[in-house]
Length: 112
Image 1 (spheres, rainbow, N blue to C red):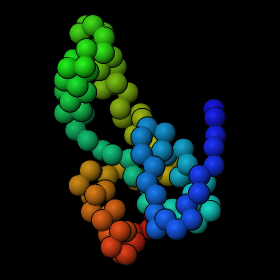
Image 2: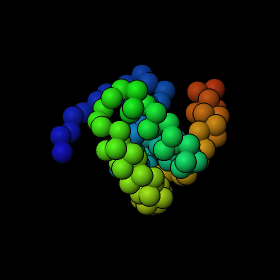
Image 3: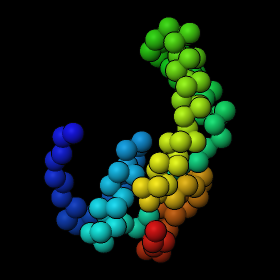
């Protein structure tokens, strides 16, 4: 795994997102820079449909492969969410995450 430093000087906050963002929660907490850590909890069926529609539109792979891959991801999603929460992220719906980040930007922190 490659690493590289980044400088947060002058930044009121930074956002790490994606499947691997939970990997840095403990270190951010240890360094005192964690204001919140969230793992999106979405309706699995809706995520499957959105992902499949996007992948089909982009013609990433053959439709049969995309359906098979999508079903595998659908089945794996609860385990992914458990892993992220196990690493310190809080499971939350997108609207709640947006409200909390807006609160952080407005100066009303909700520390996790």
